[in-house]
Image (cartoon, rainbow, N blue to C red):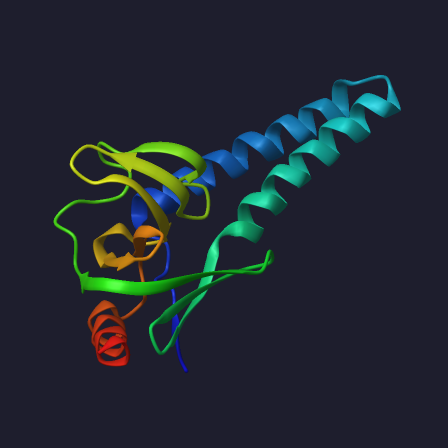
Amino acid sequence: MTEFPTAPLDRPTRTVTVAVLGLVLGVMALTGVTAEDPASRALSVGLGALILLLAWGYAPGVLVVDGRVLHVRRRLFGRREFTVAGRVHRPTWQVGLRSVRKLGSGGLFGWYGSFWRPGVGSFHAYVTDRSRSVLCETDDGPVVVSPADPDAFATALREASS
């Protein structure tokens, strides 16, 4: 079993994350100052905190290669497991560009969840730096991840899968 940290957030993802953090925290602060009803203040602060906690908690933290199984450990909410059944390679496209997010995050702490893209179809993504993406063909369909060292990750997964 080999662990690979996910790549740090790339510049566009950091920009989205900082902008959304600023927006959510700003709304929380503004509501806390302007709302006269304590219940409204608590609801605003609680909802904002919940959104940020869920987004951070589902973000990928560590990738683990265990034979043919790829484990994506999320920061707070467990892990996802995928059995590699095909090629492992660097895609010629990036998550987010011409991709439709079906369920998940489109840039807040990463690009993760279920997506759809023309020519690819449905796929899962756990990406923090789109320039370091690795596409794994699994029993559950394509899975895109972004390890800090994509070449070492791809090599380890190919060797473990053969």
